[in-house]
Image (cartoon, rainbow, N blue to C red; front, side, top):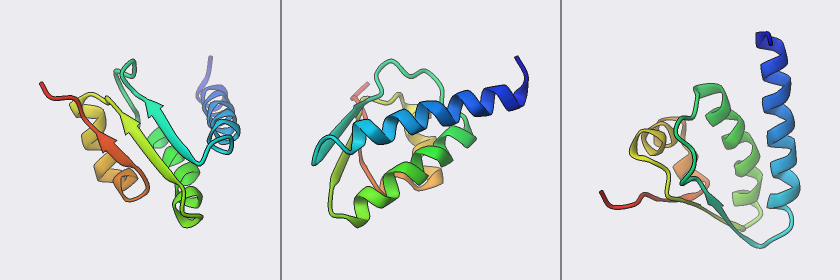
Length: 88
């Protein structure tokens, strides 16, 4: 599939995330199964998490690998969520 189809699929996945995020006051996202996170997706995650922080809700991202956690910090996800990296 092409690049634009991939973007539409990514956006749908993040749109689904909004519904999950709106279900709970304190959200925990388990990233233990995520091996990679591209820059575009990291930006999409920032866009979805920033309104939650503004409304006083807490988001925790649990168990991203070190590479994913570093990208999260670079794009500023750590400003909107607590990132808990497993000890290696």
